[in-house]
Image (cartoon, rainbow, N blue to C red; front, side, top):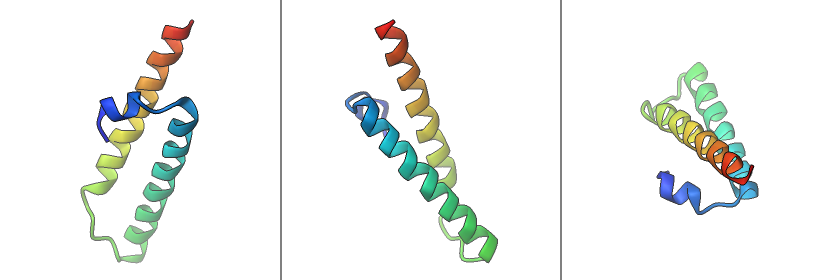
Length: 65
């Protein structure tokens, strides 16, 4: 997910997206533990998306204050 796409989201939509990303990351970790893990690059992408959302959210909150 690109930063421009994240900036278009509302705070509620960001929360929903974070929930989806954390769920997907948990599922991938479970797949890795079971031995069915195939998408080796995806956890890194998810972590970066999570960080982007948190960063942009902090920027938005600072701009409001």
